[in-house]
Image (cartoon, rainbow, N blue to C red):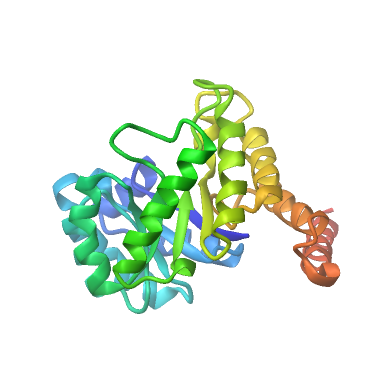
Length: 269
């Protein structure tokens, strides 16, 4: 399971405040904690800075890269901010995100051609999210053709079939799971990803729903999740699900995790 740490999002007031006042200790501390807990990428979102978004990203990215050993996920709907961020990112970043909408492709394809980042691609077009798994697969195939035409490999693409709140549509969780399974079956070389917390929006017991949904999605072939790596119960679910699904050769990861957890509990007790 590829974890993309979500905690540096300017929709959180503490993050917005830190970006506004250029609080290096807070920003780097949040990133380091996520890397230590197994994040493969750190998502950085400065959209709440509005007109100062590009400047905020250009301040944060070099700072984070001096402190981390993993790449960043550049999370912005603003093509100008995305281009500015990719110009200064050392190594290969993850672009979050592009859709199948013409406006999104027209704005971002030149940037993708130039910088060749890995890409999160949403199965979204002008008519809205996919109504069924077949539509999600068709959209993923079209986007794969477009993105590979821009110089990416299928392995560089993370498809998000769009997990929507079950509080709005009780069938949306099942639709996402079916879409992940069919995308992986028909396009085995691409990756699949979930913005995990979307499914539980507006519901009580959100953490329970999120971690249960993640375990179900892993069983269908989910490769990655945008989530909070500091959530201990979520981490436990990831390790247990990987062990039960045969995704943990010789159970090394599960046993290492369990021993570390037992040691912490013993020291705490």
